[in-house]
Image (cartoon, rainbow, N blue to C red; front, side, top):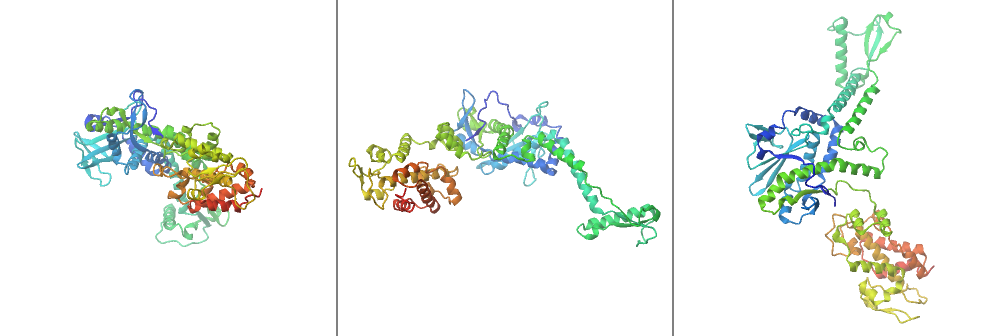
Length: 594
């Protein structure tokens, strides 16, 4: 789980610009005013420029996915150590930004205002008998007059007056030269946005003028054409006639008549041939299109996000695309979360904790779980290979897979799994009582000595599907697979089912099925397994069946294929393992036929 902030110190963090105006007074509010014309212009471009809206919403949507919670800080280092167990702090944090249902939208609104206008207002209004009401407003929706603050309700538009019980938190990105004023990347991009607007208008105007007429057809004066009695003579008449023709063409651009050329008469000697067409339209200037494309690239460079995200990933693959998105998170998304965390912690959480009587409220902070913001490509196969070669640790493997520390196996489980691996290669080990005890096998297996045959209680073995009989030292000719082969095959099936269960235990199910053995999860989880999914769930299973096949005198490929087909069928049908069906599978796939 990734927490933000997770490596900041309280004494050297870039403090987020935030203030509770209701406590500080009108002078603090007035210090921000005087330069809001640029903010209005940035909002205008947000409304008309699709490229700007896309870039802004990309960041805002990422911010909305961050999960806020209360965390504790080490008083010595100032570092966040992890989520807090204090129920009072957890209760206070659960109400921030309107609770878990409203918080994603509130975070997105804050992020959008932060990027466009560089500031927003967060209003917290206590409600009798109900949780606090949280309202996120832009800088244009709050006003002050004679020390009284009012705001426009975002849904009704009504003017509402704030009281001394309310909190009016200004959250802003300070301008480096005048830190009481807000700043944003879009402010610096306003000239570029103007270029995009003007070039788009130019292209649109060319299209409209092209639709108005399909040119003029010049005819010699000797050729007559119909003329209205009301048309004046001279150039004025010509212009009126052209305007009337253009209006008619634009009234219904879908009709063929709108593409017919106009007809005019001039002296024949001025026309090179008997009929000449003069085209009003010019080709759309490639230069204008190039200017707009260049302006869009400049906009992508100006905004707080990687250029590749706004202009497209191009020839990137899923790995390089992920690296771009991770860079966007670290450089552009994380700072917004950092400043929002600090603002809400200092202006709301700690004052509330102090009112609640919580000891040392300064040790608590609002942090974010950013797991949902960026998901890495699936590296399961690569990680398993590195893990099997002992190149990565258990903790790293669990962290990369998103598995909590509570899922760590006990020492007894580790021992049992190690024994299972050893029994796959040497099935005679199962006859050792100490081995069976560690593997929790409660059936009796008796070895009669060299050349003898191990025996087992059939009733006990049939009742317990995990009872694994040993392979006899010698096997007489028989149509039935020997007990050792069945035991090894059974272990391979349980191992494959355990792998499948672990992979099916995604985040939404973790913590809910701790009492269910992994090899039984496929029957318990509410997941329908498809054939394609089954292939992924069983990846890298049956790695040791070749050794078993050699010992049993079976064809390696047939044994591996048979066990995989049997396990695949269990997953698809959600049926429990039955030893009798496994034995039938071994017969079907060539027991005793090397």
